[in-house]
Image 1 (cartoon, rainbow, N blue to C red):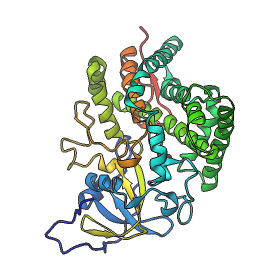
Image 2 (cartoon, one colour):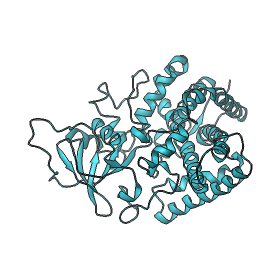
Image 3 (tube, rainbow, N blue to C red):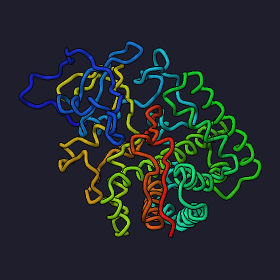
Image 4 (cartoon, rainbow, N blue to C red):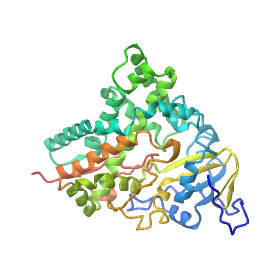
Amino acid sequence: MQNNTPSNRPGPRTDSTEPVTLPTRRAVGCPFDPPAGLAELRDERPLTRMAYPDGHVGWLATGYDTVRSIMGDSRFSSRYELMHYPFPGGPEGPLPPAPAGDMTGMDAPEHTRFRRLLMGKFTVRRMRRLTERVEEITAEHLDAMERRGPGTDLVEAFARPVPALMICELLGVPYADRERFQSYAHTAMSLAVTPEERYGAMVGLQDYMATLVAAKRADPSDDLLGDLARDSDLTDEELTGVGGFLLAAGLDTTTNMIAHGTFALLVNPAQAEALRTDPELAPQAVEELMRYLTIAHTSVKSALEDVELDGRLIEAGDTVTLSLEAANRDPERFPDHPDALDLHRKATGHLGLGHGIHQCLGQQLARVEMTVALPALLRRFPTLRLAVPAEEVPLRTDMNIYGVHRLPVTWDEA
């Protein structure tokens, strides 16, 4: 990584200013904006000292270049046990190590082994071949909405089942079990539960996957988990961890992008109309929505050695919290009104899918699902609108993946 210290400064230094706490409260009436205070911190300095709830004093990165540099720098670790939790209500001290197969909490070379094994399962070509199936599932759920008539919770009727069916079919997980594993995934990603409840949910999901892995070992099926059970050198524990990791990631992120993306479009009717009437706009619109919403809003790293960055010295052992949502609104990177949703913006390079070796493994599948689902929804229901005032839509401020808990919508019957 390049040294980012400006040449007219005397060299690296620790920050003597009073440490900040991580801003988490979003301004009332601004459901799409990052928490108030992040922009001010970013504009003052892209890297500042931060006090963690357990007493650790580390760093908060908010500038695009700073965040992206850290995400791509092997001197910063993703191992959970080296980190301090940035949100209130977490464990005292560093986190426990990642379970076997949880790629989010791994560094190279362990991470490299898993990623190489899985990359061949998530190729662009393979995901494009799934487009027809995504179109079928999308049409089926839009048909069901139309039959039931105006008025529904879009999360339950559309945003959740489309990606859930796709990830279940891809992995070979019974869709009939969805209430069970969705409940585990929801609790594991909640910021409002105790560490014990979160751990219990993770154990529950792992136990569920362990049973499924045993069945795949006995009789490998024609799906991703079946392929891995038959052809890879993964242990049962590793395959269980990989399965749980992929299932949870494939469920929650795309669900919230579809739901929260629809919410953003409905309160920006000119943008919704542009997407409805121009099919060619869809891929670009999806990138802008990922930048604008940044539902995976925060990441955490730990310095493995002393690192000089932005004229400051991050010492070995320091935890650095990365505000991806602040970085994706940085006017230094997106200069043309970054706080506005503009589907014609070239949002290439956004961090909504991460960066570096931990960039979202299933990003191509997510893009296919959103590129198909959002325009199809708007075309099928051209009068689609919120069924409640925007300020009454329940937001996922209690989750580490942002979005909406429910999205009440209605439309005019044809």
